[in-house]
Every structure is written in C-alpha cells, then in structure tokens.
Length: 124
Image 1 (tube, one colour):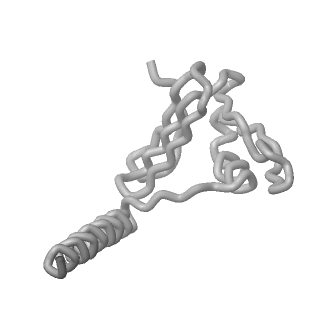
Image 2 (cartoon, helix red, strand yellow; image 1 turned 180 degrees about the horizontal axis):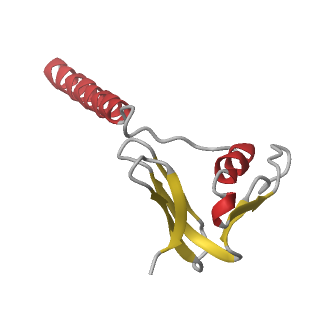
C-alpha cells in the first residue's frame, strides 16, 4: 500500500516536472529574433502611419477597457480591404497583420538595396 502511494506521488511529481520543463522551453524558444509583440490600438495607428505614403491606411477605434470590442480596426491599401500585411524588413524584424475577415488582399513591403522602405505591393 505504501509502495503504491509512493509510485503515485512519484508519477505526479514526474508529470509536474515535465509540464514545467515544457513551459520553460516554450518561454525561452522566443528569443530576440522570434519574439512576438501584441500592439494596442494606438500602437497600430502609429505603426501603420509609416506606410501611409505608400497607400496603407489603418482605420480603428480607440481602445476602452470598459467597452467590449473597442480598439478594433481595419487596414486598407489604396482603398482596398487588407486581409494580410507583411513587412519583412529582415529576418529579425517582421511585422504581420492578419484580419479576421475572410475577404481582402495580401500586401507586402518592398525595401531597396540599402534596407530602406521603398514601397508596398499587392500580392498577385
């Protein structure tokens, strides 16, 4: 009886240690190059303002924690609804916007040979 109790306890501790180890691995998997950041409403407007000269417009509402659904917005490229926006400046600095709607276009940024943003194009 005591041996079975010890086996059950050992099994529980082993499973708990495994879960903790998986959690730690997943936390440290996101290094500086793979870290994900969630943007707030104001951050979205600011982030996408740098693309405004290339036809990108972010239209959203201000976030208010007291109002469910506030802070949502939509991205447009030359007036067309954007489903997916990809800014892949380099392998360490990637911005991806995905709208939950089923419609829209995919657009991506273009950089010149010096690494400067030079345009935005619709994916064909």
